Image (tube, rainbow, N blue to C red; front, side, top):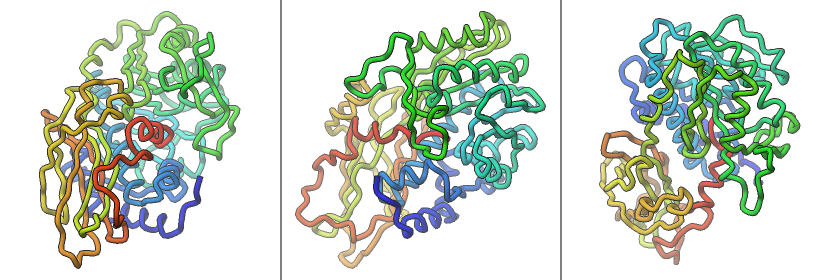
Amino acid sequence: MPDIAPELLEQARKMCADPYMRDLVAQHAGLNGRAREALDCSIHPEDQMLLHSLRHHQDANAAFSQYFNVGLQQYRAFRQVWTLLGMDQRSEAAVLDFACGYGRLLRFLAPTLADGTIWASEIQPEALAFVKERFRVEAVPSAYQPEAFRPARRFDLIWVASLFSHLPDRLFHAWLARLKDVVAEGGAICFSAHDACLLPAGEEMPVEGISFRPFSENADLDGSSYGTTYVTEDYVRNAVRVACGDGFSYHRIPRGLAHEQDLHVIARHGELDLTVLGAFRYGPWGWVDERRFGPGGELFLRGWAASLDDGPVQEIDIRVDGVLHGCATGLPREDVQRAFDDPRLAGSGWVFSLPLDPQAESVLVEVTARDARGEAALLYAGIVRAALRAPGTEPGQPDAATSGRAWLARLRGFFVR
């Protein structure tokens, strides 16, 4: 994987510090008033999720867009679980963001939940120190061995994004058992995992229902304890029964996290009705595959967008230097249809071209997909420069590196911590 040029890191840092970009992210999170003002878009320089994205894209704009696109989707997923289960109606309900990384979710929780109700736990000391300082949350150190994790209280909702998708069988069971002991009465645990359908092509799932390999996007962690894991739904159900006993209800939200990892929710029988999670919505999704100046100096963009609940969206919003343009979808994208195994997405493609001043060296571009309910996804935000001109390139030709299943595969590992 290529190294990251210092100028890319500096460009990403400046984007995160830019008030305009912060307001754009806050707008897509639905934040207003004090919550919008309080949003902190700082990203730690060692945040593996941003670094991984920078290495893949070699483009600070794309990395910034992907980092926050995925973070916003996780926040929407969290808010739905939180509200559908009625946690928002409880006085001072406590949430634990377990294995929080450098706070991709916490930056959105801190401005929106009451002070003193958010706890964060992480095994990387520098990450835990960062989220405690930046997002003003209570910090609880994690541990490699579950029995060493001893928070001083219990929690109404324990949110665990992209930890169980990295655990071997022994720790998968052990962490379920440990977290079960620190969830409050009437509380729930929500954790994500890679389903067996995401196994690399040609690989078969072992009969036990779990496939673990000792490597991940985070080279700083012990591969024997933190690798890459795929599981079947039957494996998860059985793990919940073995680790937590028969007294727990279980609900699965397929691909509920970043439209990739499944969300698994468990709660003690009779304390919560998990069937309400059937109302979970995935929201719009998409990507901008190409963004450049064309041979004639025009801005050229190409991508796809759709609602994973309702199918096609009629058009997307594109702002160029603050001026809003509508762009119709409907172009063939069989690669996206295959990637999501959803025939409704076959016409999710779009192409946008806009003549520019011949002297223009750069433009600020924002691309947003909205569904019929007004739910929005930020697909891209950043500066497109004339240096990206591609003379002789035919607009609209698919970019194999970022289309369809290849794009979806590259998304794995960027997600959630």
